Amino acid sequence: MKKTVVLGASDNPSRYSYKAVHQLKRSGHEVVPVGIKRGEVAGLPIETEKPALEGVDTVTLYVGPQNQPSWYDYIISLHPKRIIFNPGTENFELEKKAQENNIETLHACTLVMLSIGNY
Image (cartoon, rainbow, N blue to C red; front, side):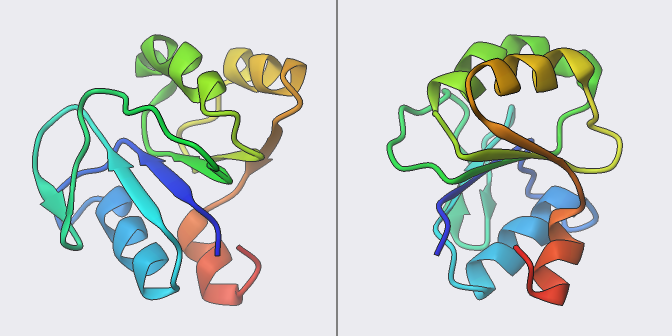
């Protein structure tokens, strides 16, 4: 299973990040929700302090491009294998930084990927 950081995690059930955390967990993946507000989603605490993590496979983004620059160094420091840019999070600058660090980038929807079995 793939250790996944959900960046932009929310405890609001109407948010796609909330749904993604639940679906990833149901699919057996280790999930680390990271956001700007404390809370809980799928029984997991939402981390707000950019936790140091090892073995991250995927960072899936639910943060708009205008709010991503303060996260660049953190994302790169996780050394994920890939970053998923969910709809509305596309960002050429971050993609370039990722590719310079040998991190795969995908323009995709985590929820769709999980639902069709190609996560």
